[in-house]
Image 1 (cartoon, one colour):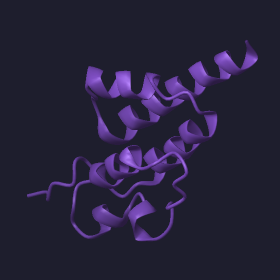
Image 2 (image 1 turned 180 degrees about the horizontal axis):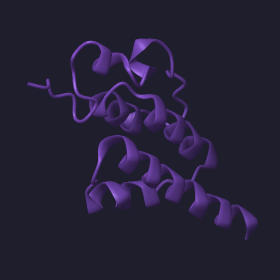
Image 3 (image 1 turned 90 degrees about the vertical axis):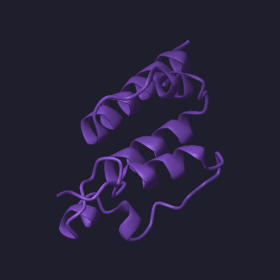
Image 4 (image 1 turned 180 degrees about the vertical axis):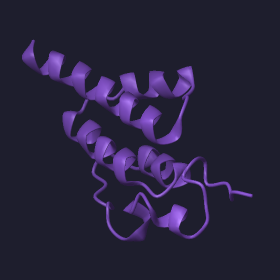
Length: 95
């Protein structure tokens, strides 16, 4: 029962971080998050959402296998695209 509550908390935390970093998200993405039943995967995705340089990097990590450990380099610098003149939202260049 305690693990179930922790999974719910981690799912809600992940959704909150995604919204803070990338804005509104689709119901499909929320459903995808709620289908994740591994606490370690959810915690990895929370870190990825908080540190991904843009939406595409996070989405790639979301689609990666459960045993992924690729949170390295400039792809996980949340300011990388901003510093290069790119918006951190959906990887589109600002005008």
